[in-house]
Amino acid sequence: MIQSMTGYGAAELAEDGVAYSLEVRAVNHRYLKISIKQPEHLQFLEADIEKQLRGRFGRGSVSYTLRARSELQPGFRALNMEAVQSYVSLLSSVAVPRGITPSIDLALIATLPGVCEGPALDEATRKKYAAVVAELTAQALDAVMEMRAAEGKALWDDLRVCAKAIRQELEGVAHRAPTVIEEYHERLQQRVSVLTSAAQLELDADSLTREVAVFADRADISEEIARLRSHLVQFDKICERTDAAGRTLDFLTQELLREANTIASKSNDAEIARGVVEIKRWIDRLKEQVQNVE
Image 1 (cartoon, rainbow, N blue to C red):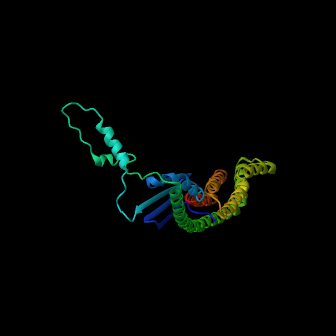
Image 2: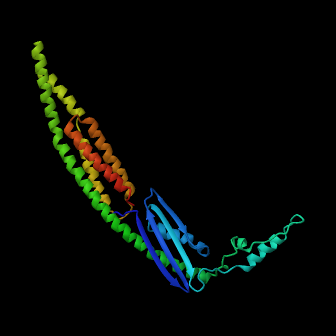
Image 3: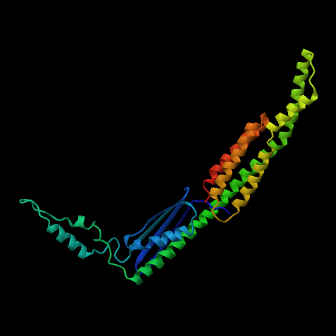
């Protein structure tokens, strides 16, 4: 069944005195757009995280925010004293004009690259971090997918309501279409009778038949009705698929609207026009809801 592009998932985990918290948010987007935010010492995991996300999302805007806080020393980070000394030595060697006493702001130095970064991670530590983050990500993504599935069920229910309404209006149009030709024939015959009677002229039946045939061909909407029915059947089948169907459904709604517009332009009947207006109203609702489908 179809899935919504909207979802939220969160997960928390404590490992070796470090508390991890993760939030994953997914909203509508035409394509797949991924934004990853995480602590600096875990930046090496970005490619793995993105791969994990792409394996679960077909399209949508996905925001991934990972936080890590040490429970042993909350609020503090170890300083890289070698980096601090290097910056101080470099700044001290700068020549300044005579009479000016330079000062070094250690708080400002603490914001420079490498100062508050931890030491290089060995392979064992990197693997440990990778395992923790992968597990945390899987938990959060499971929650997102559960929400997206529930939203998708609600979407499918609403889409079925719209498709059913379109079918009902379409059957009314299909039932009315043959009557339009018959009524046109009767009206034309009455007008011709009045005109020929007043002018004392005669019009052969073949000419009248040809005129009605031309009108019938020009106003024939049977092909458009058949295509609309076919599109609606295909719409139902696509909604039952498990893969990303949003773009295909979007294309189908455009085709539904195109056929409805063609019927409106070919038919010269008020009742059919009313039916087409209702069909287009439901198609617009379909288009709006399909924008939420992955």
